[in-house]
Image 1: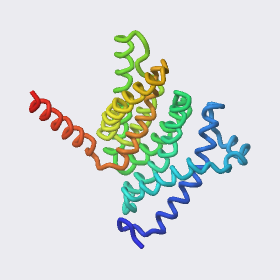
Image 2: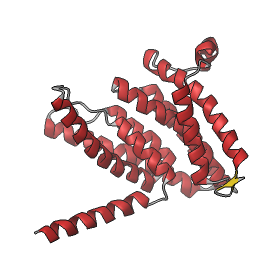
Image 3: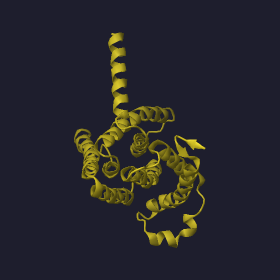
Image 4: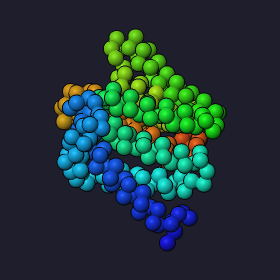
Length: 256
């Protein structure tokens, strides 16, 4: 049986890999928060905790792996193979970033550095075979981190307080190595759009519940956006946003 011209067995294999990675991700999720570091020594020292079942996280990562295979297809050249593998590395770290920032309102430096270091390794490998791809990945790092650093500095000057955590700046710089220049711009654009919609809903909910806490972690919205862009066609977010703005302006002009 084939799904999207891919033999079903390949989906089962990558799903099983996702389940195993999910076990490790669930353990590392705790270690990042409690210890702030993650080493292979910790892995073997705490192997009982590593292989403790964490079904929800395991199935989330397995599902994302299967989606990744469905949208990217089986690689028939080195570049496509690298694209598949690099996102297989990135997905567990994105899920951990979502959970940790949602629960603890921080993206650990070690997690950001791990994403950055692995991203640099892939950039170097790409550079051996295609220097233009490696250049685009480095540019994605500069654009992703630069946009959010500018927002943090300008927002801090205007508001007189930190407008955005530096963890988000490091996060966007790190994942920019995986996406490249245009896609990381799409992640940023979609992230602000998603945050605006859900942020308003969350603030209204907190007002109703009389919760004065106005802080909303931005990391989860960036993770959602990164996963969407990962699966979407390049330029899809920009085209969709342009069409939305065009439709909105037509409605406003028509209403006037």
